[in-house]
Length: 166
Image (cartoon, rainbow, N blue to C red; front, side, top):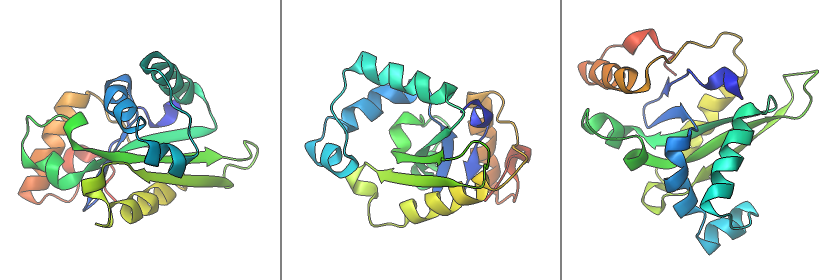
């Protein structure tokens, strides 16, 4: 879904960012896990198939995917990459495009060290709130926004960069 491509959602435990091609290699590594394949009813894909899947989900009006970042890691240093902070993903599937109030949410905390800490709970609540909003705030330049948002969060600002804060 392209409507979230310029969105960054900040929570206390997680940061939600759109699933982009830059996230695919880490995601692909996770999905090699037989445990995750079993838990998500997924089949193993090649890296090229994973890139193709990411592109198709981005174009699908009925799917909205965010990568779940561990906020503590993400805020630790301005030079930290999103990929190094990835914890999982959260998806919103609109089940009736005629009625956008109907949908399903899925959460996967793929990174074992991030499980059992409430990241999934917060990500689902944030996705429910996001899915129910009509206005989306722009994300703009990914690198610049990440640095400004981290700096604002570190300083205790309530609304870093004018972005949506949940």
